Amino acid sequence: MKLGGLSSLSLSQPNFSWLPTMIDRDINKQNILIIVFDTLSAENISLYGYARETMPNLSRIADRATVYHQHYAGGPFTTPGTASLLTGTYPWTHRAFGIQGKVIDKFIDKNIFSLFSDYYRFAYSHNPVANTLLRQFSGSIEEYLKMENLFLNEKNYVSQFFENDFDTAWFAQRQIFNNTTNYGNSLFLPELLKPLIERKYSLEQIKQKYEEKFPRGIPNMDNDNLFVIEDAVDWMSHNLVKFMQPYLAYFHFYPPHAPYNTRIEFVDKFMGDGWEPVSKPKHFFGRFNPETHSHTRRIYDEFILYVDAEFGRLFKTLESRGILENTWVIFTSDHGELNERGIQGHVREPLFQGVVRIPLLIIEPGQTKRKDVYTNTSCVDLIPTLLHITGKTKPDWMEGEILPPYRGENINDDRSIYILQARSNRKTKPLTVATATMIKGDYKISKYFGYNKLIEKRNGNPLVELFDKQNDPEEINNLVNQEKDIAREMLNNLEEKLAESDEPYH
Image (cartoon, rainbow, N blue to C red; front, side, top):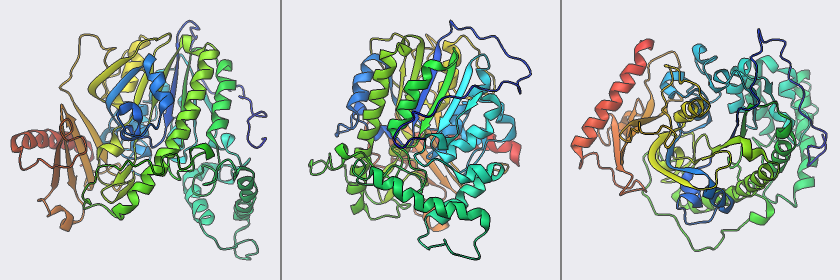
């Protein structure tokens, strides 16, 4: 593969020999293109009222899209968030809880790809955690592009040598690549791992080629697997026109996930702009010095500028090649990011807006006018909506609803939606350590349970937070003791759902 470009990459012809029968495809059907940018919080996007203009291209694209303003992830990191998006069910149902977690067996064939069996189905992700799920669903995916195909480094030795134990080997590789010890001449290093060490040093040559364009470093995962968004956009621009139609294509890109290595023209773009986020007290789950948040948030915002620039370029290409005339385009994320209250990142216990409120734009074929939806919606609603607009029926096991405005008169603005963080739980056991959140109307309630008893006793056992997200969007004032009736009703509803989800696992 040529560095810096995908000129030598082409889409291989899919092998359909494993399919028992091929369903005839209706080429007159409209395509579906889902684009996920990992760790993109709606709280940091200018389209949703953020003070910094982080996504000017997205704002322009929104003028011809349906924009969802109160849209929520299924969980605070990739595994539960992506699994909910791809199954239309909440984490307590699909049970993909932990990092690198998988859905329970009965959901291997219950996903967006299996439901669109009459479409050509394609999937790609930079993210190894998302790829754990895509590999699990690969029986319903006709073309699964391995993540290293869009990396700058040509080979991924984990895939080459450990294909059947990818998840375990991936973490072993992370330990090696994050260790500065020189293993090159070690007599005790297993022969099979030596290529990993050799690869570590070959990456330095690639980094030197890109250091001028990416002064903070090339976007990467764990100091390995270097990539640039430009290559992914170029690949899509080149290959989407070659897909069999109709197609369902799922692209899940790693940025703006940390490290926040933006392109040179966006470095320090917001330095000294005079804007500071609202000061918030340190949370009992906060582990970092709040003084670091301004810097971390700024470089995150500057990385979002890079995402926006490349998505804008992709959208322009899709339009110029006529793809938008017959394709539904969905722009969203799997979860957000936190830089507040002593909390940084997203694999954390609290479920504040920054980590769970995500963007969603749906662009219909030929759409020219903007529509705004302020109803509370969830990522589990995306599949039911796509089924509806393509003339399919939502299966009974799915928990999402058809999104407005596509559901017509049957609008339930008073529905409850749910978010769950349960990374320490075994998927075949009842929930014992988790944060569960319910959103209904203007109110959002979170229940923490199974954590350190000293933490829980600060506000009783279990700890409960209630926020009015309409009048207190920064979630400063916990109303659990002021709005006791609302808190009691919402907590009862949430606990009923938790008990219901645990029932099969007692």
